[in-house]
Amino acid sequence: MGITLRAGPIAEVVVDVPPVNALTVRGWEELAWTVRRAGDDPETRVVVLRAEGRGFNAGVDIKELRDAEGYEALVGVNRACYAAFAAVYECAVPVIAAVHGHCLGGGVGLAGNADIVVAADDAYFGLPEVDRGALGAATHLARLVPQHLMRAMVYTCRNVTAAELHAFGSVLEVAPRDKLRDAALEVAGQIAAKDPYVIRRAKESLNGIDPVDVKRSYRFEQGFTFELNLMGAGDRHRERFT
Image (tube, one colour):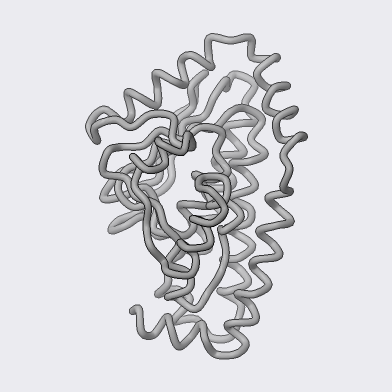
């Protein structure tokens, strides 16, 4: 359990944090470090980011924030999520997110910053932040769905399915749950067969032409989460949730 790295030309970063893969500050920091470690290995040609258990990722551990005194945990989790999302985006090689079950909050941050998303037929994506008294990861959701749907999802906290994202083109393939890893590894194998130097330059060049600076955009969103907490909305909604 925890966050593990299976090294190799096709590296696998696996999150297994029961019951729902909601991560603490330390968990997000560990995920960031693991993804960076995978990408920094010269033998790695592609990274598959996946999870075990009920779903891909349920975001931050709300109970850790609820039980903490002051704002240290809030600052910690914001920095750690920022680091994890940036690690996926800046990974020196392409990252394939293999998503099953729930992909919520921070999970959208990871999938939205991945280069390719492959999803199980039971996968669904959403941002419940408004119902939790927080904001964030709309930056990454906007990489998965059209602008007006993104806004509706933020305001209403509705989810979208893997099939819907496949129709938009943001999910490359939808596979049965028990075939998800195989589907992700097949796509990874196609990338791994290419010239690794060229692929690394391709990743760097594609990041360089992105129309939105995802790091700065997400950091801007985080500022409103701090405001909501200062005004008491964060505590109010976390208590209601837990």
